[in-house]
Length: 248
Length: 248
DNA sequence: CCGGTATAGTGGTATATACAACTATCGAAG
DNA sequence: CTTCGATAGTTGTATATACCACTATACCGG
Image (cartoon, rainbow over all chains, first blue to last red; front, side, top):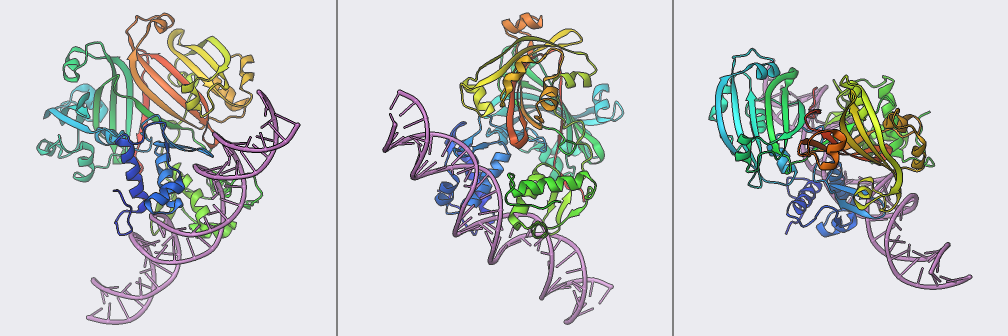
């Protein structure tokens, strides 16, 4: 099937990346597996070894593979690549993990910001903001509950969007011209409460991961304050930390 | 000085990386500057364009440069980079939070690496590594239990260190010459088990934040694998995320 | 049985080359 | 004046080739 061609608008190494990502998604390649050698992949798909190597290298940088000299290239045990550089919403996050994101909108409305939210968004309390309450699914299973508060001029237009089938972040960036550049996030362990238990279909007192996030657009303008409750036993948060290297 | 030679034990692209880093450090190249083209750098240092390109690519991945097709490669304008991307051990972390760190060593020994640890450290199972089991305190109160596995040549010398009054990370960096440059960390919510409950003096079933971290030194060599259990109601994990953006 | 050693296979580094895609600039044509 | 086009310079993609460094295995000799 998946043949790599020259006429395609997409680069060959990119096509191979997608092919390999798919092999991981559908389970053909499992964590810990040895993947074919660079020479082998090149021959198999009719591309040169260096082109295959480029595809592999990028997936290594994304954390999907790791190499061992003299032995080969392997699929990482940890499935993910939440690069610090990349700021992802739920939809992109799930896709990167190889799971199918899903959403059920529980409510969407304009309402005045309360004290706590207003402080995070750096606006006056009582100002009308868009509030979105969503149940988040992964492969059809409830994974998290998320409440987003969004504040920008014209945010009431969001009421007319189909937010079950569109990524909120994608909409903000493409349709509303609001690039999401940075975010501050807090993570804390807790327990599932009675209300969340119903939505998430887990017992009260199950482990829960609480996250609170403020997302910023240009000029460090806060756009969104989101607080989420993740099922503790279904979600792992990955982060990559780097020490400033120039000062060694 | 900066000539790139073949006989050097270090690869040419790596030498060029160091040269370019130095140019940034000493201010010869400032944020926003256009650096010489790939061909130019290759000619200048007597290496091929692709080799120069490899050096640049890695620094782009590290965030020092960004490229614009048709225009050239530029030094990044990085606003923050200082405190949020830094990599801290428990001691530094607590001081930054304004709390007094404390440590009780529960055990310190050399023991063979089991399968799971060996994979994270990319060594052979059964190899002798240093294992450190510590109870971590904040302002005198138990906060977390941490198990560190450390693997480098000569790591058995750590047995003689006073690890109740010295930061492990600080020792590794200063005394053993092992700069800790990057880390991959996983966070997951869970519940306190019976063994941890005793040490942490909280009820079984309390919320817990589990973290697993692999710390890397130069050349992406894994040095430490640490897994910790934090009291969920006493600890919040902060992270800052940034999307790559070209501001010209 | 143990320990070299030869070998084949892997990723790592490096070069030379070619063309595509994109950007800026300059000059000619309208 | 504006617009189009040529052009030169940049990064992006792709190939072919070569050798190095490292690993595992099999085989041979002690």
